[in-house]
Amino acid sequence: MNGRVLAIALGNSLLWSVYLLLTRHVVSGAHLDAWAYTLVQLLSAGLVMLWVGRRAPGNWRDLLAPWTICYAFMRVVINGATAAAIVWLAVTQSTLLSTVSVLIGAGSGWALTRRTPARRDWPGLMLLAAGIAAFAAAIASEAAWRGMLWLILSEAVAVAASWMIAYHPRNSATDLAARSRFTGEILVAASLAFILVWSSAGLLGLMASPWAVAGDAFGRIDLWLYAVLAGLLFRAPGTWLGFWTINTTGVQTYLIALTAMPFFAIALEAAAAHLGWLAPPSLSLAEWLAAAIIIAGAAWLIAARLKEPPGVAP
Image (tube, rainbow, N blue to C red; front, side):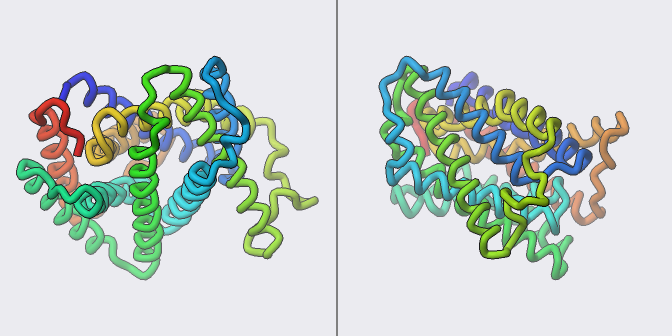
């Protein structure tokens, strides 16, 4: 693979790592409503991408296309399951365990394309599987297993959504405006699905409704400020680059590039802890050893992509 393309994909992983760190610091530190925060950033990111792609032909009815609606609700499941996972798992733990998406991607790619993973990938996949199993065993408890199950659901749906993007003809557009409009439509549709699910859950009494009289989901100026900035600085470019990476390199390479997030997350958390912003990552010795195996597997897979012949997109 072209080193420049992989560098861009890894840069996107770094972008998301910074986003996760700041989100953890902002949402928990300021006690913001997590659902409102996510909804506002999705909507603001979508609107800015629609503005960037305003010269591309399109119609607002595209938001109601069955494919777009399906993907939008998948994003709600992904965000909701991820939020549920970190109730029982620390951010560092969830980031390391989320590398299971590469294993899910390899299996689903095998089923969809009838192509087995490349021989050069097998050592990395085996290291990754062993590290994830060891890490899960190291933190095994009734509470942790609940978080792991939510995380597996999140990653499985995320991989399925990535394959949907890979096969969507509009994601292969070379025009910047067309790609931006496509990304914007996806994000706006996801925000609409988000508010619909949240409102329905509120009516059923499963959670506080965003329209509750006593609620304050959207009534804080700092929430709007943080969420809009997160949408413009992270969600919009991160989603655009993610779609571009899937089209350019394939789903599996996109997922492998995301395995760099534990590298970045641990380093960023350590730096933030040094500055007094966050508590340092708290892992047991067994967890650190398992994390080292996960990172070794991720490094192997990333290095293997640099030796990949041009034009191959597993």
